[in-house]
Image (cartoon, rainbow, N blue to C red; front, side, top):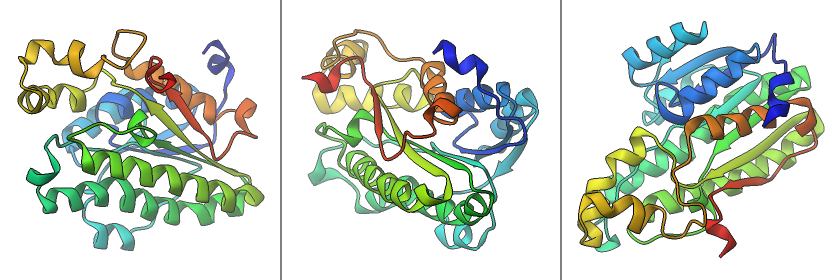
Length: 253
């Protein structure tokens, strides 16, 4: 998006979760490049410190799965990017209920708690941007991903409620819905995908990850970050309650 080059976010603070790598790190670079002060939130202390140093921001080591502790913490930001996520691939009958609950805690309840914490400041300033990194799985389903698909569908609904409540206060809320992105999260699930589909690991990208996409390639984290940046800019000030799909044509079917 060429238009993102002119976006200026000086004086804004952006809190990005899961920002030590992948999409989160790309968002940290994009938003800091537009002038925002970036808070790199991740449980990976070393990774968070590395990205924070790179973008001139600050590292925040936090375990988003510790909901009781998270609910007691104070956060203030003009931009919140709910990006942190995990993946487990298994049939429903084999899916560990503890893992199911943990994934919803991280990808639904934690974004709720963070949004709840930052909204008062956004309302007071009359400006705010909540960007939820959802997925094509927030709009479509795939077998063997019951927790992830459930969590992303829930995030979609929550984002719309934030949009409705935030609109009178200058706050927008939107989802970004990529297909498979070249990130550690995707790379780590290749072995599990091969196991449940009964194919070699070398065939997972072609036969599982890209089978529904018209454009046969993985997305790059920077492409997702460009869309996040645009949603924080002035030309997106009336864009709220929406889901922006960048799935290579997957959901066109």
